[in-house]
Length: 101
Image 1: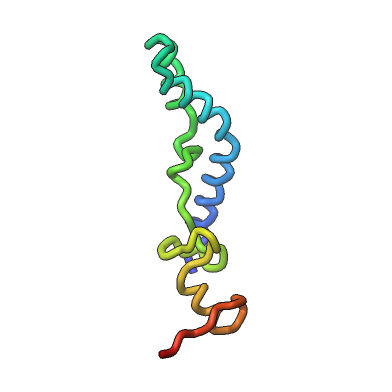
Image 2 (image 1 turned 90 degrees about the vertical axis):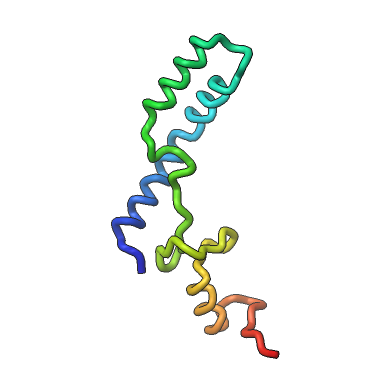
């Protein structure tokens, strides 16, 4: 089980990301638009840098929904490999069986 503080910090980052997503995308479009003047683009870049760092999408870490583990997490299931194995051995994952050959 991961530390609760680490899991809570990641949840805070997710919330900030959702809150500032539209504003961040608009500013990024202005910054990347080569047709605008350099001054306008620079002002947009300054506004972008004033936003909280944790509102960036890249700062969010994929974590297991069950344990909070950060490594070996399947994106589609949002579960770590260890939790997935445990659930599949208990028969809680439909269609998944232990292999034998």
